Length: 268
Image (cartoon, rainbow, N blue to C red):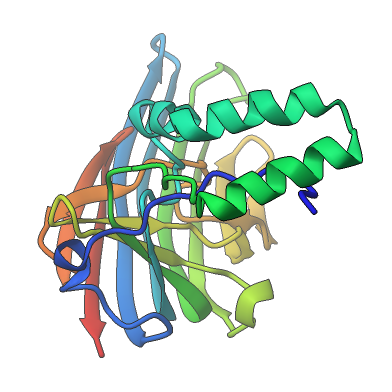
C-alpha cells in the first residue's frame, strides 16, 4: 500500500570528488597556539593617561575525527544549493498530483501503488554540487597564559592625583572534557574547491592573578582573580580558506590594537 510519497534525496558526491577524502571515522591530532598582542594608549584631556600592553597565549591539543563527505559544511547550504534541493523531479510532481486526487481513498492509493510498481518508479536524486568533509573535535585540552600590564596616570590636582600599575599574569589549564568540554578546533576540507577552513573556538574566560600597585591618592596594593579570556569576543568567522587539504599552517588577523596569530600543526 502507498503509505506516503518517497522523500527527495541529496545526490552523493561522485568518486572523482571524494578520491582524496579521508575514510569516515579517521582520526588526527591538531595542536595549535593562538597569540594575542595588543597595545593601547588613551589620553583624556591633559589630566588622565591610561595605557595597556596585552600578551595572551592559548595553547590547545585536539583529537579530530573525520565525518562523512557531504555537499556543504557547517555554515549550511548555499543559496544555489538550497534552490537545487527545492527543485522537484517532474515525475515526483506528477505522482504528488495523482496522490492528492485519491483524497485518502484506499482503492485509489492501492491502484497508484500498483502503477508505480509496474513502472518501476524511482525518484530522481536532487543534484546538489559540493563535497565537504568536516573533521569534528572529540576531545581537547590546553593551557591559557596572560602577561598584561595596565597603567593609569591621573592628575586631579591637590591630593587626588594618583598613579597605578596593574598586571594580570599566570597560567590556567584546560583539562580534557570530551564532547562536553572545550572543543577548540573544527576543520572543513572542501574537496570540490581543494581548500580548507579552520574554525577556531576560544576557551571560556579563566581566573588569573591581578595585582595593582597604586601611589598617591588612596595608595596601596590590591590583589584579585578576575576571569580573563584570549580576546573575550565571539567571532564565528573561520580562518582561511587555505589552499589544499588538511595541513599545518599559520594565519594572522588584525584586531583592535594589535594582532591575533593562529599557528597549528597536524599529525596523523
